[in-house]
Amino acid sequence: MPPASPQPTPGARRGRPSRRPEIFAAALRLFRERGFHATSIKDIGAEAGVTGTALYAHFETKQELLAEAIRAGATRLGAGMREALAAEAPTAEQALANAVRGYVEAVLDDPDMNACYVLESRNLDPAAAQPLRGSERRLRKVWAERLLAVRPELSADEARAMVQMAIFSIVALCLHHSRIERGALVDLATSFVLGALARPASQPTT
Image (tube, rainbow, N blue to C red; front, top):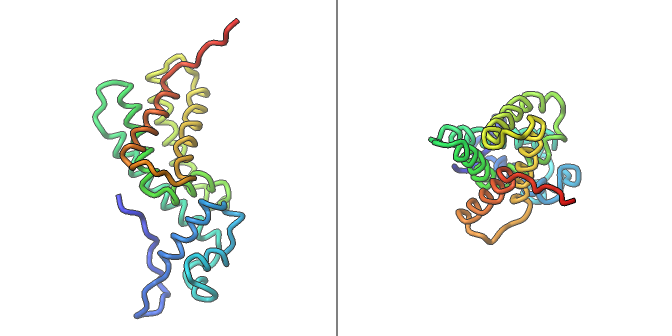
């Protein structure tokens, strides 16, 4: 799946290529490396090689950049998960594996965007965040249902907590560049998360 690109700016000067994609990509890199609050509009402009009025012609505020990044991340993750959930699964274990692998692959398709989506959503203005919360809840509900089919001894609250931990462990892949080949990294991350989800915790010794 190719990286999503922001839409062209309607007011861009005719005959000049838009710098919007470069600005968007620069913002994602910096949000991933430094965090939203530690990144300024000037930082983003310098990273993209765009300064002053040229930058504000494309994005008026840092919050606008964040909202667009999170919308794009949600769209990509949703598309990846729908494909994974539609895959044939003869057993409950395979259905859970499909969900985990689909999420891992979607996250690794664009680490900058998806790290921003998961880690920086809390910094969105409430009006921009509200439409995204429903899709996020649905995604976690599907994960939890598939986990409970494999681990029926879990409570619904335990399943949701484990899904949350699994999602953050996958997103941790976005925070540092890995030298592992992508296919091998997908296999490794999928195996790690499935091992944590599907294996009952060891009982304390007395």
